[in-house]
Amino acid sequence: MTDLEARMARLDTYLARYRDGGIPNLIAGQDVAAESWFETRSPVDESLIARVALGTAETVDAAARAARAAFPAWAAMPGDRRKSILHRIADLIEERAEEIALCECWDTGQAWRFMSKAALRGAENFRFFADLAPAARDGKSLPTKDHLNITSRHPIGPVGVITPWNTPFMLSTWKIAPALAAGCTVVHKPAEFSPLSARILAEICHEAGLPAGVLNLVNGMGEGAGKALTEHPDIKAIAFVGESRTGSMIMKQGADTLKRVHFELGGKNPVVVFEDADLERALDAVIFMIYSLNGERCTSSSRLLVQDSIADRFHAALVARVNNIRVGHPLDPATEIGPLIHKTHFDKVTGYVDIGKQDGATLAAGGGRVGDKGWFIRPTLFTDATPDMRIAQEEVFGPFLTSIRFTDEEEALAIANGVAYGLTGYLWTNDLMRALRFSDQMEAGMTWVNSENVRHLPTPFGGVKASGIGRDGGDWSFEFYMETRNTAFALGNHKIQRLGA
Ligand code: NAD
Picture 1 (cartoon, rainbow, N blue to C red):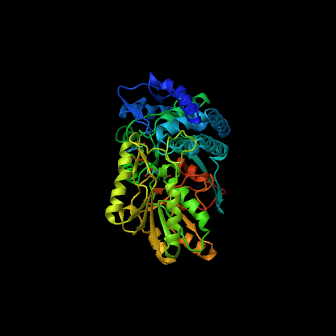
Picture 2: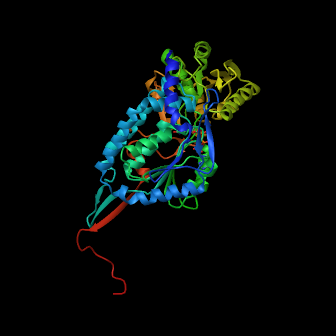
């Protein structure tokens, strides 16, 4: 049996339990079937994975009421008890890491070589926020001559978490763990294209001792369950990861109930390579940051800005490597790129190949479909694009790189900042002054200098411009899930104005 066959066999045993009953919603600690169902299919061969309960506005209402009922006790639980439950969740994630990784690969098309660590990163997210839970409520003492001001933090209430289909397990834990650590209860609406790992997470949370109603899972469509969640009066805040356009819709939908929102949205992130950079390392990073995770990654460096003097040499090396990338079955350990998530997304990405050609950029690699089953595409590279082209402005969200030449620093900065988005920026130069100057002016929530994206959980994560509102990571996450209150105590008999005396 090959490695691939062995993994497929194990996957089959994990999926068997969804075959008859499908994937129900999970509300107030109970599985809840639905009147209607939708299907999740594998992007590898379009085979049916499971039918999934289709949540409606009524389902969301039941979940929100369960979250509201569970909130007072969960919020009042001492932080060190929440901490131990969250660590127990991390333990169980680690125990089921293989199952989570296999399901994630099959449901999303992501390659095993990246997903095999996804569950462990999810566990790390839980451990990181578990350790912060005991101090989450801490505040400041801000004394004046007459008063002692004391701030304290309080969980905002039940929150909605809405996640996308790219790396769904990692992203769900990244949002849910801090919400629980802060003392909030949660209704989670995962993406309809990739519901499997959210189900596993909800099961794990309950097995770990999370009280009923603290985490509720409602599957469904964005315009159905998702919209209802953003409009529900019991839900105090929405943590959303997805497209910028959807973020804007959610802001409108949440306006009547004055929702607090946290948005992690799209990107068209530049990687700027100057002639003085370590070009071999820059090449590795450029390739990794757009072709890993099928390019379905919000932080991907989808625009290469390369200095004219080295562009021909850099492109030649790039084309050779891109043509060598292995596209294949996601569970094959050799595979570097798996299939795109869904036909709709495949059509979008291949549509941009046509747009790039029409706009007059040079198709230097890829662009075509691989095989006739599943949504596989060759990694694609367009060179000699101009900054105004659609492939240089719009998020494609696939293994699709657009390269643009520049002559000097000023032009590079104008191109880097000349898009609607501002999530990440990557800069390659060995000129220290330039690195300081350029990174300071780059319009991006996160910049890496001479590095690919390496995540450190205490640092702030989030975008500027159309890439988001708010920050995650460390205490920034608690700022969103909690309210800060101030109480002023008089320290003596200070003078009070006596009106009407
Ligand atoms: P999407 O916006 O289409 O969907 C995301 C989620 O929102 C899904 O669960 C969907 O059902 C739900 N939704 C859709 N319409 C809704 C509505 N009207 N009300 C409430 N919920 C609604 O995004 P996607 O295609 O699943 O994900 C890809 C996008 O996510 C890309 O733009 C990518 O850049 C972005 N993303 C951003 C980050 C980040 O940290 N900035 C991380 C990952 C993905």
